[in-house]
Image (cartoon, rainbow, N blue to C red; front, side, top):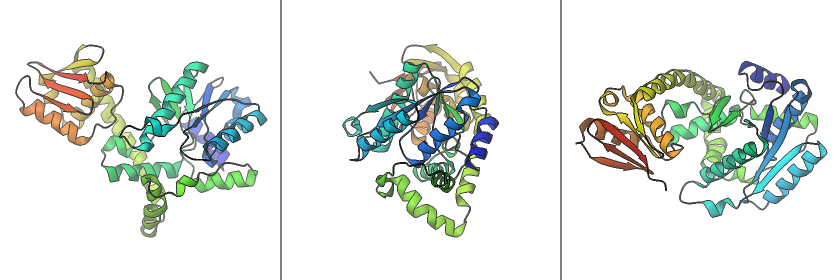
Length: 328
């Protein structure tokens, strides 16, 4: 069952092609270990070059033993492995610890990809992860973009991120590993309800399942359907951004004021996000309240008035709107 869904997902979404070089994100947990073995099964058929990447975040006493487990497993399977240890707690600067870990992990994947001249990173996210992500974003407040959760294929800077397990449930992965007698590491912090995702998985989802036993599938379906709607809005907004974009510098750009102010709010929000991402590199910490403030400035503010949102200056000029990064 797992192999069948894994291959169907790869083919349906065209995640890989023959002779691809793929970075496998392997933590040592059941999902990533199953992903590793799944790719091994098709390695010859697709003539793949597989490189395992393990990020040791140094947050738990088991972190070093998990790194050792991955190194020994890759040696046994004759697979190349790159590992890196960083004490994530030392890089924590007021953002969530989970977000800091994610940022450092993806920076590591970028470094691995550059080092090995690879363009694809395979992640072991599955259907339960998708449902949890959707719920987490609903709780924190999100729009269509956030309701998509994550996609079978997406981009991060110059990388293509693929998720061949997106059609699988967690219990299907565990059952497969047990039947294959494949060992993996168990992360005890997954039981710590101080983390929002764990609280959703262990407390909220079981309660929702009492109302609808198929809630995980329904939330996943919501993400898929929302992705289709957002894809249309995204492409339309991208065309608008290209038309409205004016002068650009290294960390700033300008948008045509008159036409920006005429956009539908949904398109306006996306165009502004495109602009922020271009000058800052991402849209982290930019929330709906900030987009509302920007629209208020553009529609009602006087010329030369400005606002600050996280790491960004937005200034209304005579004929343009300046978007400038404040990160040195």
